[in-house]
Length: 291
Image (cartoon, rainbow, N blue to C red; front, side):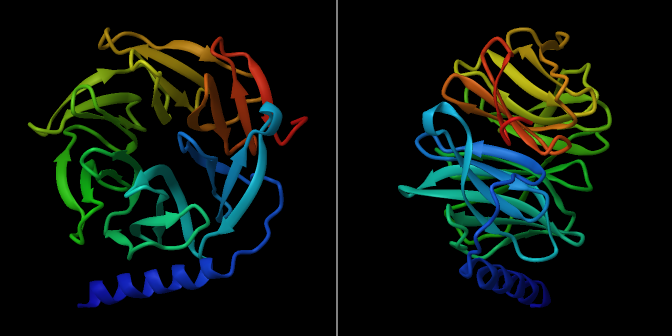
Protein backbone atom coordinates (compact mmCIF):
# COMPACT_ATOMS: atom_id res chain seq x y z
CA UNK A 1 0.00 0.00 0.00
CA UNK A 2 2.83 2.41 0.89
CA UNK A 3 4.50 1.80 -2.51
CA UNK A 4 1.23 2.42 -4.37
CA UNK A 5 0.64 5.60 -2.38
CA UNK A 6 4.15 6.88 -3.23
CA UNK A 7 3.52 6.17 -6.91
CA UNK A 8 0.19 8.00 -6.72
CA UNK A 9 1.79 11.04 -5.09
CA UNK A 10 4.56 11.19 -7.73
CA UNK A 11 1.97 10.88 -10.51
CA UNK A 12 -0.13 13.65 -8.98
CA UNK A 13 2.90 15.92 -8.65
CA UNK A 14 3.82 15.30 -12.27
CA UNK A 15 0.30 15.98 -13.57
CA UNK A 16 0.06 19.18 -11.53
CA UNK A 17 3.39 20.38 -12.92
CA UNK A 18 2.69 19.79 -16.58
CA UNK A 19 -0.80 21.29 -16.53
CA UNK A 20 0.78 24.75 -16.40
CA UNK A 21 3.12 24.74 -19.37
CA UNK A 22 5.51 27.64 -19.27
CA UNK A 23 7.17 29.34 -22.19
CA UNK A 24 10.76 28.17 -22.36
CA UNK A 25 13.80 29.81 -23.88
CA UNK A 26 15.14 28.67 -27.25
CA UNK A 27 18.16 27.16 -25.52
CA UNK A 28 18.53 23.40 -25.28
CA UNK A 29 20.07 23.48 -21.83
CA UNK A 30 22.00 20.21 -21.41
CA UNK A 31 20.40 17.69 -23.82
CA UNK A 32 20.93 14.28 -22.17
CA UNK A 33 18.98 12.19 -24.69
CA UNK A 34 17.04 12.64 -27.93
CA UNK A 35 14.53 10.75 -30.06
CA UNK A 36 12.46 11.58 -33.13
CA UNK A 37 8.95 10.62 -34.12
CA UNK A 38 8.93 9.28 -37.71
CA UNK A 39 6.50 11.98 -38.86
CA UNK A 40 6.98 14.51 -36.09
CA UNK A 41 9.41 16.52 -34.04
CA UNK A 42 12.69 15.53 -32.50
CA UNK A 43 12.49 15.65 -28.70
CA UNK A 44 15.43 16.51 -26.44
CA UNK A 45 15.44 15.63 -22.75
CA UNK A 46 17.21 18.45 -20.91
CA UNK A 47 19.22 17.64 -17.76
CA UNK A 48 18.12 21.01 -16.43
CA UNK A 49 14.53 19.79 -16.13
CA UNK A 50 12.64 20.15 -19.40
CA UNK A 51 11.73 18.49 -22.69
CA UNK A 52 12.22 20.50 -25.89
CA UNK A 53 10.61 19.90 -29.29
CA UNK A 54 12.99 20.54 -32.19
CA UNK A 55 11.81 20.99 -35.79
CA UNK A 56 13.69 21.67 -39.00
CA UNK A 57 12.26 24.63 -40.92
CA UNK A 58 14.27 25.05 -44.13
CA UNK A 59 16.39 22.12 -42.97
CA UNK A 60 17.81 23.94 -39.94
CA UNK A 61 17.09 22.85 -36.35
CA UNK A 62 15.06 25.15 -34.09
CA UNK A 63 13.32 24.70 -30.71
CA UNK A 64 9.57 25.02 -31.33
CA UNK A 65 8.15 24.13 -27.92
CA UNK A 66 9.04 23.02 -24.40
CA UNK A 67 7.53 21.72 -21.20
CA UNK A 68 9.06 21.43 -17.71
CA UNK A 69 9.66 18.39 -15.53
CA UNK A 70 8.60 18.35 -11.88
CA UNK A 71 11.17 19.63 -9.41
CA UNK A 72 13.56 16.93 -8.23
CA UNK A 73 13.28 14.72 -11.30
CA UNK A 74 16.64 13.74 -12.82
CA UNK A 75 16.68 13.15 -16.59
CA UNK A 76 17.74 9.72 -17.86
CA UNK A 77 16.26 8.87 -21.28
CA UNK A 78 13.48 9.64 -23.76
CA UNK A 79 11.73 7.52 -26.41
CA UNK A 80 8.98 8.64 -28.78
CA UNK A 81 6.39 6.29 -30.25
CA UNK A 82 2.85 5.87 -31.55
CA UNK A 83 0.50 4.07 -29.16
CA UNK A 84 -3.09 3.43 -30.30
CA UNK A 85 -2.64 6.01 -33.04
CA UNK A 86 -1.42 8.73 -30.66
CA UNK A 87 2.06 10.24 -30.59
CA UNK A 88 3.52 9.74 -27.12
CA UNK A 89 6.75 10.24 -25.22
CA UNK A 90 8.16 7.72 -22.77
CA UNK A 91 10.34 9.45 -20.19
CA UNK A 92 12.86 7.72 -17.93
CA UNK A 93 13.76 9.77 -14.87
CA UNK A 94 14.98 9.27 -11.33
CA UNK A 95 13.46 10.75 -8.21
CA UNK A 96 16.01 10.24 -5.48
CA UNK A 97 16.89 6.53 -5.59
CA UNK A 98 13.63 5.57 -7.31
CA UNK A 99 13.49 5.11 -11.06
CA UNK A 100 10.32 6.08 -12.86
CA UNK A 101 9.00 5.69 -16.39
CA UNK A 102 6.16 7.92 -17.53
CA UNK A 103 3.97 7.99 -20.64
CA UNK A 104 3.21 11.54 -21.81
CA UNK A 105 1.57 13.39 -24.63
CA UNK A 106 3.94 15.40 -26.79
CA UNK A 107 2.90 18.51 -24.84
CA UNK A 108 3.78 16.94 -21.50
CA UNK A 109 0.45 15.69 -20.14
CA UNK A 110 0.61 12.42 -18.20
CA UNK A 111 -1.40 9.70 -19.98
CA UNK A 112 -1.25 7.10 -17.19
CA UNK A 113 0.31 6.60 -13.73
CA UNK A 114 4.06 6.19 -13.43
CA UNK A 115 5.86 2.87 -13.51
CA UNK A 116 8.27 2.68 -10.58
CA UNK A 117 11.62 0.84 -10.29
CA UNK A 118 13.26 0.74 -6.84
CA UNK A 119 16.85 0.55 -8.14
CA UNK A 120 16.63 3.48 -10.50
CA UNK A 121 16.55 3.60 -14.29
CA UNK A 122 19.35 4.17 -16.79
CA UNK A 123 17.77 3.93 -20.26
CA UNK A 124 14.69 2.63 -22.10
CA UNK A 125 13.84 1.06 -25.47
CA UNK A 126 10.45 0.39 -27.10
CA UNK A 127 9.15 -2.54 -29.17
CA UNK A 128 5.96 -1.36 -30.89
CA UNK A 129 4.54 -4.75 -32.09
CA UNK A 130 4.55 -6.18 -28.56
CA UNK A 131 3.86 -2.82 -26.88
CA UNK A 132 6.81 -3.49 -24.58
CA UNK A 133 9.22 -1.07 -22.95
CA UNK A 134 12.60 -2.44 -21.92
CA UNK A 135 14.41 -0.75 -19.06
CA UNK A 136 18.04 -1.00 -17.96
CA UNK A 137 18.42 -0.56 -14.22
CA UNK A 138 20.33 2.39 -12.85
CA UNK A 139 22.19 0.58 -10.08
CA UNK A 140 22.00 -3.16 -10.79
CA UNK A 141 22.93 -5.25 -13.90
CA UNK A 142 19.25 -6.00 -14.50
CA UNK A 143 16.81 -5.45 -17.35
CA UNK A 144 13.05 -5.10 -16.87
CA UNK A 145 10.06 -5.24 -19.21
CA UNK A 146 6.95 -3.08 -19.03
CA UNK A 147 3.69 -3.98 -20.76
CA UNK A 148 2.51 -0.59 -21.99
CA UNK A 149 -1.02 -1.89 -22.67
CA UNK A 150 -1.51 -3.29 -19.18
CA UNK A 151 -1.54 -2.10 -15.62
CA UNK A 152 1.08 -4.46 -14.22
CA UNK A 153 4.33 -3.40 -12.58
CA UNK A 154 7.66 -3.76 -14.43
CA UNK A 155 8.71 -7.43 -14.59
CA UNK A 156 12.27 -8.66 -14.22
CA UNK A 157 13.55 -9.96 -17.56
CA UNK A 158 17.26 -10.79 -17.24
CA UNK A 159 20.57 -10.04 -15.62
CA UNK A 160 23.82 -9.48 -17.54
CA UNK A 161 26.46 -11.54 -15.66
CA UNK A 162 29.73 -9.73 -15.07
CA UNK A 163 28.29 -6.33 -15.83
CA UNK A 164 29.00 -3.40 -13.52
CA UNK A 165 26.73 -0.57 -14.65
CA UNK A 166 24.26 -0.73 -17.53
CA UNK A 167 23.57 2.16 -19.87
CA UNK A 168 21.82 2.53 -23.24
CA UNK A 169 19.49 -0.23 -24.38
CA UNK A 170 18.23 -0.86 -27.93
CA UNK A 171 15.62 -3.28 -29.30
CA UNK A 172 16.75 -5.46 -32.24
CA UNK A 173 13.59 -6.48 -34.11
CA UNK A 174 15.40 -8.75 -36.56
CA UNK A 175 16.67 -11.10 -33.84
CA UNK A 176 14.10 -10.38 -31.11
CA UNK A 177 16.99 -9.30 -28.95
CA UNK A 178 18.21 -6.38 -26.90
CA UNK A 179 21.55 -4.61 -27.15
CA UNK A 180 22.65 -3.14 -23.86
CA UNK A 181 25.91 -1.41 -23.02
CA UNK A 182 28.06 -1.55 -19.92
CA UNK A 183 29.28 1.95 -19.08
CA UNK A 184 32.27 0.78 -17.03
CA UNK A 185 33.56 -2.12 -19.11
CA UNK A 186 33.03 -0.43 -22.49
CA UNK A 187 31.22 -3.41 -24.01
CA UNK A 188 27.84 -4.08 -25.62
CA UNK A 189 25.86 -7.19 -24.74
CA UNK A 190 23.32 -8.93 -26.94
CA UNK A 191 20.45 -10.39 -24.93
CA UNK A 192 18.18 -12.99 -26.53
CA UNK A 193 14.73 -12.11 -25.19
CA UNK A 194 13.30 -15.64 -25.53
CA UNK A 195 16.16 -17.45 -23.79
CA UNK A 196 17.13 -14.48 -21.57
CA UNK A 197 20.79 -15.29 -22.23
CA UNK A 198 23.37 -12.61 -22.99
CA UNK A 199 26.67 -12.64 -24.88
CA UNK A 200 29.28 -9.97 -25.52
CA UNK A 201 28.69 -8.49 -28.97
CA UNK A 202 31.18 -5.61 -29.22
CA UNK A 203 33.93 -3.96 -27.18
CA UNK A 204 36.53 -1.24 -27.57
CA UNK A 205 34.44 1.61 -26.14
CA UNK A 206 35.23 4.07 -23.40
CA UNK A 207 31.61 4.57 -22.33
CA UNK A 208 28.59 4.22 -24.62
CA UNK A 209 25.98 6.92 -24.02
CA UNK A 210 23.57 6.15 -26.90
CA UNK A 211 22.99 3.56 -29.65
CA UNK A 212 21.07 3.64 -32.91
CA UNK A 213 20.77 1.27 -35.89
CA UNK A 214 21.28 2.43 -39.47
CA UNK A 215 18.14 2.43 -41.63
CA UNK A 216 18.85 -1.06 -42.98
CA UNK A 217 20.00 -2.41 -39.63
CA UNK A 218 23.43 -3.39 -40.90
CA UNK A 219 25.36 -0.83 -38.83
CA UNK A 220 25.21 0.09 -35.17
CA UNK A 221 25.99 3.74 -34.39
CA UNK A 222 27.27 4.41 -30.88
CA UNK A 223 27.95 7.69 -29.09
CA UNK A 224 31.09 7.24 -26.98
CA UNK A 225 30.92 10.22 -24.64
CA UNK A 226 34.23 9.82 -22.79
CA UNK A 227 36.16 9.47 -26.07
CA UNK A 228 34.13 12.37 -27.60
CA UNK A 229 33.21 10.49 -30.76
CA UNK A 230 30.54 8.57 -32.64
CA UNK A 231 31.58 5.14 -33.89
CA UNK A 232 29.99 2.35 -35.92
CA UNK A 233 30.03 -1.43 -35.72
CA UNK A 234 29.09 -3.92 -38.46
CA UNK A 235 26.25 -6.13 -37.20
CA UNK A 236 27.54 -8.86 -39.53
CA UNK A 237 30.86 -8.95 -37.66
CA UNK A 238 30.41 -9.61 -33.93
CA UNK A 239 33.38 -8.59 -31.76
CA UNK A 240 34.75 -6.39 -34.55
CA UNK A 241 36.52 -3.16 -33.58
CA UNK A 242 34.67 0.17 -33.70
CA UNK A 243 35.18 2.48 -36.67
CA UNK A 244 35.16 6.24 -36.11
CA UNK A 245 32.21 7.93 -37.83
CA UNK A 246 32.66 11.42 -36.39
CA UNK A 247 35.01 13.05 -33.92
CA UNK A 248 34.27 16.75 -34.07
CA UNK A 249 36.36 19.32 -32.19
CA UNK A 250 33.03 20.69 -30.91
CA UNK A 251 32.15 17.43 -29.15
CA UNK A 252 32.37 17.51 -25.36
CA UNK A 253 30.16 14.62 -24.26
CA UNK A 254 27.96 13.13 -27.03
CA UNK A 255 24.84 11.96 -25.21
CA UNK A 256 22.13 10.99 -27.72
CA UNK A 257 21.54 9.87 -31.32
CA UNK A 258 18.53 10.17 -33.63
CA UNK A 259 17.91 10.01 -37.37
CA UNK A 260 16.48 13.08 -39.09
CA UNK A 261 15.86 11.75 -42.58
CA UNK A 262 19.27 10.68 -43.83
CA UNK A 263 21.12 12.86 -41.32
CA UNK A 264 22.28 11.92 -37.84
CA UNK A 265 21.41 14.20 -34.92
CA UNK A 266 23.87 14.06 -32.01
CA UNK A 267 22.99 15.72 -28.71
CA UNK A 268 25.88 16.80 -26.49
CA UNK A 269 25.13 17.69 -22.88
CA UNK A 270 28.68 18.94 -22.30
CA UNK A 271 28.62 21.23 -25.32
CA UNK A 272 24.98 22.23 -24.63
CA UNK A 273 24.24 21.68 -28.30
CA UNK A 274 22.65 19.55 -30.99
CA UNK A 275 24.84 18.65 -33.96
CA UNK A 276 23.44 17.51 -37.32
CA UNK A 277 25.79 15.28 -39.32
CA UNK A 278 25.75 14.05 -42.90
CA UNK A 279 26.10 10.35 -43.72
CA UNK A 280 29.81 10.96 -44.16
CA UNK A 281 30.09 12.31 -40.61
CA UNK A 282 30.59 15.96 -41.55
CA UNK A 283 28.89 18.76 -39.62
CA UNK A 284 25.90 20.31 -41.43
CA UNK A 285 24.07 22.29 -38.75
CA UNK A 286 24.23 23.16 -35.07
CA UNK A 287 21.69 24.23 -32.46
CA UNK A 288 22.23 26.80 -30.99
CA UNK A 289 23.32 28.30 -34.29
CA UNK A 290 26.87 29.53 -34.42
CA UNK A 291 27.91 27.29 -31.56
